Length: 313
Length: 249
Ligand SMILES: Cc1cc2nc3c(=O)[nH]c(=O)nc-3n(C[C@H](O)[C@H](O)[C@H](O)COP(=O)(O)OP(=O)(O)OC[C@H]3O[C@@H](n4cnc5c(N)ncnc54)[C@H](O)[C@@H]3O)c2cc1C
Image 1 (cartoon, rainbow over the protein chains, first blue to last red):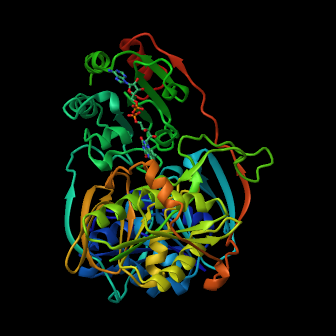
Image 2 (image 1 turned 90 degrees about the vertical axis):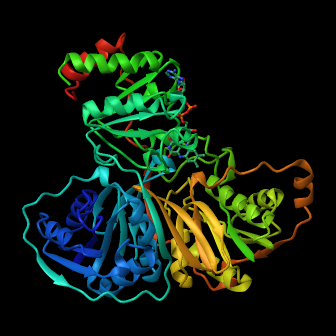
Image 3 (image 1 turned 120 degrees about the horizontal axis):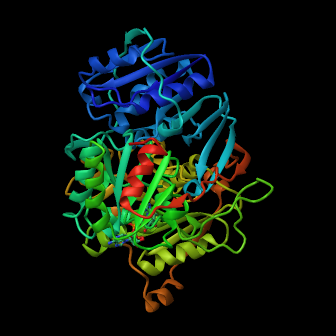
């Protein structure tokens, strides 16, 4: 039997999170196929066909799949689900949105946000904001899984999969797309950036966030935020790192004016190197930081920029 | 318009849970429990829709042990009208919860069902979507704004790149995100009043739902511990170490 990975993409580019889900599928065993559902998404299909370890790409192309809305994704995935023992997709906002619908229709309990595959039916997933790791054995005949992208290696580009076009049935019910307001940025994507610099309530206001953006531009880093900073309007919602925001694990995570609540730590504690800049020496963020600097951020950040200049940034 | 709001009793968000030494779960003895924060946001939103005149009745439902009634009372004290308590003394997985909620919804015929996007204990983020699929209804997850329209509802959602707005006919299912609203505290008079609001007692069997878990928990362990590193003296020291020691610059 085979596993099917449902690709994350924007109709033009295959999102790297898909590569992590393919790695998880390979670990489950058997053939791995990828479903690319979208509108005018042929370029994504070409990219998916090159993924190492993938033997077939299913191409579902129709206007109803343009935004990968949950009802349409449910219908198209169910139309091919019979042939698979496992269905996987990255635990992105989009994957979290449509995947449980598919699980419910298959009468399967979804295994959310897995961080390890122990065998074809045993998986590890975080609970309680990552304060505990739960190992579960699924008794369902089919597995429906979302995959935490940061904990699996990203499969490469050495594949040459065959491509099959599939029909796109119309969903029985559907929400209608009205509009989208996307934050435009030339910086790398938060979820996959090598360096992330995040600001918290200590930033004070949205203008001050520009201090972090300047550093980010020098380092080719993404900018993140705590919930408090997003709630206060200092940064857009998609910057939120944490239990209920994005999970990141960059090479370097710099937390500026962030206290380190468990909900925030849940989203960044797997980063390789953590730096904390906070004027409160007792802030819990220091308990996970490799390098801590107890100081006023408004002094430290401009200085940080100057020091970066000195070493050639 | 009737609104159904499912609520879950969960560990309070301020509690840092510890794994039990026998690895069977986390230690919940004498730990503070509260309404799951995302469920609170769902209750608040329903009340606001009622205050605006867009809703006429709010029914809250909770599936869980006897203490789940306290969670229902909290919602009633905030302003919901009546409760349904489905007794279950074991852990009920999102799939079974969704099946029970479908039974409740078929009996109540709400126009909107508003749920929290995730429970902060098991972090599954699945119940609302599963309920929508089982009922064959449209959904809007991770809502940061809800507007009742003549024909249905418009919902703005928090997605990976920003915000997305969807429009759908009712009945529909919405799950809440953090920015939807800030839940109110119940006033003392409202807490007293809530004591007299009715709570209907039901069982999973009455809805014909088998709540046997599909996921067998083999073990629960602590995550790898991360130790505190060093405090550096200056920004220059920090940058030097990031470059020479850590090799990340
Ligand atoms: C259901 C739920 C879900 C949540 N999900 C998330 C989530 O996903 N992500 C998340 O981040 N949070 C989340 N939270 C919120 C979390 O509990 C904290 O409230 C939040 O992380 C705090 O943000 P903060 O550290 O920016 O603010 P604070 O805790 O207020 O900390 C601000 C810090 O800035 C420092 N500071 C202030 N001024 C300066 C200065 N001039 N120089 C240096 N330092 C300074 C202070 O010393 C302090 O440590 C969630 C909460 C709930 C209830």
